[in-house]
Length: 403
Ligand code: NI
Image: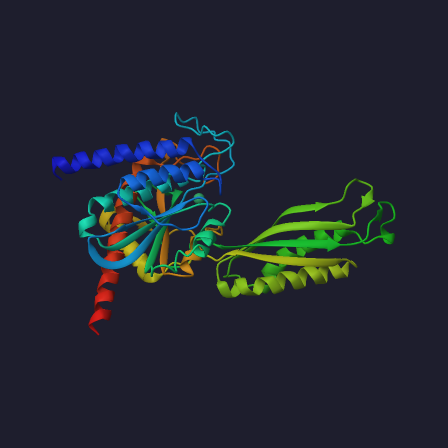
């Protein structure tokens, strides 16, 4: 590498570290990312990007058109922070009380900006168009939907989409990559148990909604184990159970609020009926009635084989042949999956874990840390992936023209 290259690399690292720390210092929760959007817009405009006129309250889509004709591919980052009081002790810790980037979306934005800067530098040789999606409200699984509804996939044909998340459970220098499910489908359930209230000493004159509701909670746990193929993961968690007003009155009703996680879309499609039937029948056994509301949120991340191959080749070129590791998928959700319903995509995990530097805490921990030493590698992997995708679809487009 020549001296000029080394100098450029150093100045990019310095710039990105400064950006990351600034973003970290001023986190904003989902749908409130106004200042973050303004900062992003300034950096991107300065780098020569066009901010596309999508009708969205926060977040933005920035585009660069290369000097050579070609297809359009997209890269997505999330931008929101969490309502968590930071406890990292960092010199650039959050200055917004009770809000912090405890999931590393500041790191994700920095990587996207880094890739955007690198592509802008070689704009003239770029074969096609790249769209950088700075998506709001990932934590509330609303942002991807908002962008899609704003027309993200209707104003221009987008051939592919890529995205990443930091992963402290994977060592820095490694990348967790799969061409199948990486993260789970997320759905919400709300179950209301209607009984008949009365005196705590005379249960025979009442229909106890707490007892019926408790039976529903237990019944739903065995519903999964007795109805779903054990090789198909499903989790039903009733995280909230509210009922009653005092110790000696049998409650009239109970409200159960829960989350349902799965991978396989065929299994997911069966869950509303299963949950409704079991809840109603169990409640009925106690003389109560259950109303069940199943609220679909996001499907599972299911990576496209070819898009995964582009990421794999990029990682191997940038980080070495053994840098790709098989990740342990999680039923945690990620609304990147909604984009994958429209275009082939790949979402992967950039390893950030480093025990010596104390980077071990998982997402949403108040002492969560990312790893600035990984930023430049991540930027290079993203750029390399996007260029591979552009190359591939340019050839496809040209073939189409010839025939
Ligand atoms: Ni996150």
